[in-house]
Length: 230
Image (cartoon, rainbow, N blue to C red; front, top):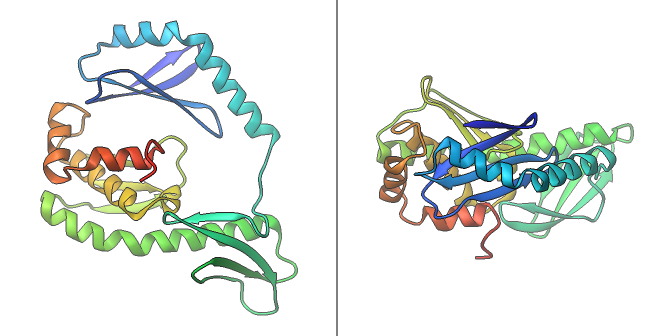
């Protein structure tokens, strides 16, 4: 559900939580709200209106920061892949453009005339392929357990969601940023989207199904959203 807050769309998701939870996401200041299942639309709007000034201020600040600062990939920076930290390095050479990973670092080899944008695209494509290798065995495993079947799955950059599911066409999308998270986070998102094929809404039945198929899903949700250090 999307609620308009003075021209700013606020995504509202009903979940099995006790209190309203607010999150503002970079780079564009998108606002996502989790509310208890029993909250009515009027209650949600009233609570958002109370926090309107704070929400609009911080959302605008993130948008301004995003438009004024751009952090490119730099040589020697720390780079997180599947929950593990690596050191990122760039090297010019005469051979094919490619990425190489060992136990401690990721090295990006490019030709001398490769631009920063091309280098970024090369890394993104490499990350996408990494994620693509992890999804098929997870799908095969969980589709059997949940007794559902997807018609298509893909990976793309998403600003406010880790995954999305079209329940009518049984198509699932995964956020490319999952490649930076622990593998269990990808598995949790996959199960979450598959369960939506049984129950499209975030209602009581949905969370009962999540607990049935993945009893520790709340721990994985905390880990995914950075609320846990385990």
